[in-house]
Image (cartoon, rainbow, N blue to C red; front, side, top):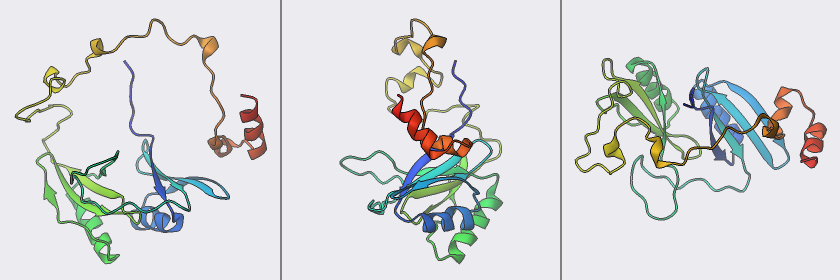
Length: 203
């Protein structure tokens, strides 16, 4: 079984990296731990936890998202609603609410969802964000619950993965076929831009 250890990074988009840094690093306190860039392109990473990051591409001609309330249905092409960041306890929610209000950024009241308490806001790119504190004694990971009155057929099969619905690999990828191809992030580990370009040309 594959062992997931968290979200390495969520990749978002901005037209204004400085405004993004001011919000995520300076207002929310997430360290800016890596940055890649060249004319017309940037990719910066902010630390959420020891395991998780949020990253932003800066694309100068990208248009800001239309503002949409968290969870409000839309029509047409769409692939993302909002992201929720977990904090340790309710006191963290109240501190976040105070910081956002002091910065004149809209933030919701605290909402009780039964298993989490949450506040909602938007970042400078109009990305819908939520901050959630766990409710002590309520852990849906340890005790999954399905209260949908008309759950889908797949949901009725329970919380655990059901591998019979997908073909299984006949064999693992042979060691001789396991190749790792170069990406721009190699420069964060000490490679030069020229060596990365040369590696890409050799593919």
